[in-house]
Amino acid sequence: MSGAVPVDRLSRAVQLGKGGQGTVWDQPGLRINDGWPVVFKEYSAECRRELDGPVLDAMVAFVPALPPETGHWLCDRLAWPAAAVVDAGGDRLGFLMRRVPDEFFLASELAGTRPAGFEFLLNDQGYLDLVGISVTPGQRLRLALDLAVTLGRLHALGLVVGDLSPKNVLFRLEPEPGCFLIDCDAMRLRGRDVLAQRETPDWAVPEGEEPATEAADAHKFGLLVVRLLAGEQDTRDPGAVALVSAELGALAGAALDVRPGARPGVAAWEGPLRRAVDAATGPEPPVAVPSPGPVLAAPTVRPLSPTGPGRTVPRRPGRVRRRLLVLLLVSLLGYGAVRVGPGLVRAGPVAPGAGRSAEAAPAADSVAQGADTPADRARGQAAGLDGLLGRNDGTRRQVTSAVDAVTSCSGPADARAAGRTLRAAAGERDKLLDALRSTDLSAVPGGPQLADRLRDAWTASALADRAFARWADSVAADGCAAGAVPRTEDWDEGVRQSAAATAAKSAFVADWNPLALSFGLAGRDADAI
Image 1: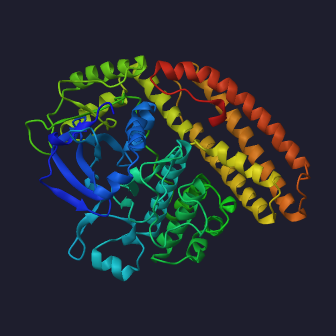
Image 2: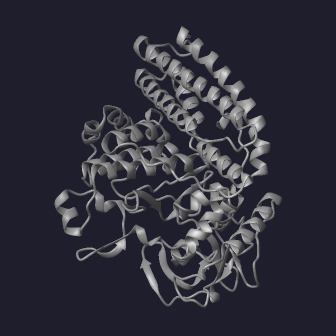
């Protein structure tokens, strides 16, 4: 339990909430990396008896072991356990985590001030008017898209949400629609649970199905989309989704299938949701790609500065630059926790820009984005390409699962669902190719060659996905016998294009990985491109 925090250093003066699992206490004297406010979740006596301590420790250690940009991404969207809290005997009492950001709270005369859970949005317009929520259909779609992207990437990291329900997913509408996940200690990390899995009533998987699997998350996500777009708490009718687009309606219907293997993975929703967002609101604003600035491998929880709650001392750009360079060297050398002073506790990842005053933010951000030297421009462009690669996480697994579903010959419905998944994957490749065409790599050594190889890889992958989708359609139409799934011309074309894609991906990563390392970015496996 390296880095555990003794409970006698914490405060129980301000209670923020209390539920079946325990109590959440504010810690006004602490910040994670001088930025994020900290809270202490103290388990009830019953939960402590059930608690699997080593799994909680594994959760705490999970983020620091990730590539820095991945850790930053995760902790920007989840209230992840940052440090275990122990009593004098070393028994685990709970953990520290980031406090829910202010933009994910709702204030109204009817509801008071409380976390903005999705349950507010699962109501008709009359209720929304009463609580002062104004949400457009386009914003609903953007929220669904943001959650789909988040869940797809969590699955690629070996995380399953499990109790995915509108109380555990918070929303914001401004400055742009987005989601924030809480109760993360209930998630399943690589098949292991801190506490026994529980499900929210009317948000459970079909009877007899194992909870906390990717298929279970896919079912609950589909249910959430159905209820979000319908504005109803308990509907299971995907009709409102089909009115938005037939493509989304088909996904919703498949997600609610009682057979886990018939459901498309959550990642399959991203392309159709993007197209629906574009149709409803115009093209989605470009996704801001974080700079490759360092993220502490084990960031620190430290006392609040003398300036008082919620404020930090503005830093001069030169000082920020020196600090970033030092931390970048630390991350490149592979060191673990960085201790900046005595008595600091290891916790979660740094959030660039979090907790800075409005005066300090522009100067600090201009350094973090690194746009004032050729080296900085190259680093920023490489980070942009790395962000694009990250958008493809999990796609290959979805494609492989879809092809396997057809070759297992479980029936026409599964083959049709696989075809939909494969077309969705091809659509995602198209989106990536569009984004790649507008990605500037002129300052990156060998940038044009990298772009060409990646373009060849994604083009061939899209052709393979579509060929396999046509093959799946033919299997669904003509039937099959166990062990005798037909291999058609479309199958052969899919195999040829897959081989071409694999060769292009291998060539790309051979050039990219050494370059990525030089910029402090993570290397990539050819299979994940």
